[in-house]
Image 1 (cartoon, rainbow, N blue to C red):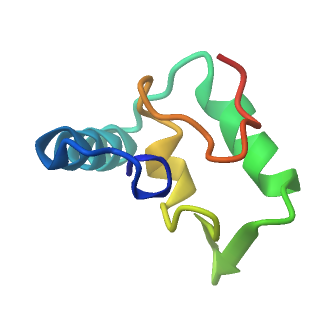
Image 2: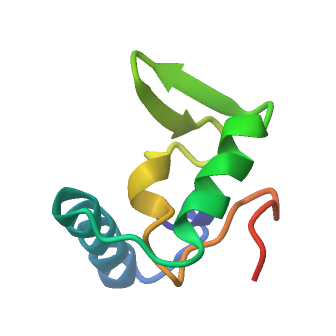
Length: 80
């Protein structure tokens, strides 16, 4: 889930993917999660596949990526 594949540490990238999907499965949300998802919904680089939202810029599944504090939007749309 690293931003556009810029994460050089594959173990760190794999960890973030696992954390994001685990948080999503457990319904874990942080104070920033909904704001991140809303920003992605408004973005021209979003891609809806059925009822799921994906980022065309980095290829990530937005609801999972938005639940990982260390992740960033590749276009800088998420507040720090």
